[in-house]
Image: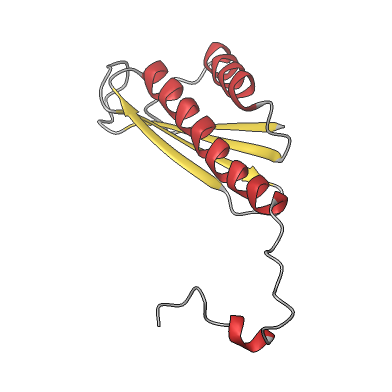
Length: 127
């Protein structure tokens, strides 16, 4: 899994921050084999460097063959916004990929041989 970390000019990016983000993402979502890439965007909405303000973390997980899964988290501390986004991403992937797995496991209901196939159309429509 590839992890890309991007910051705006209000965040002091350093090796420790990159390692913390990578470790948090990998430990939380490494079990999802379908995730190919995670883009992490960090910013401070107040624009005041070196102050804990409205720190923002956005994570976008690229899932093979499907739409990206995007989550956002705001917190007073940058590390809290990262952990909040990681937990939201884990829940979102659990939900999205779990639904896909359930959908693939289900078999369609058998049609009754005595009833013509045309009569099955529109059973789920609001008519």
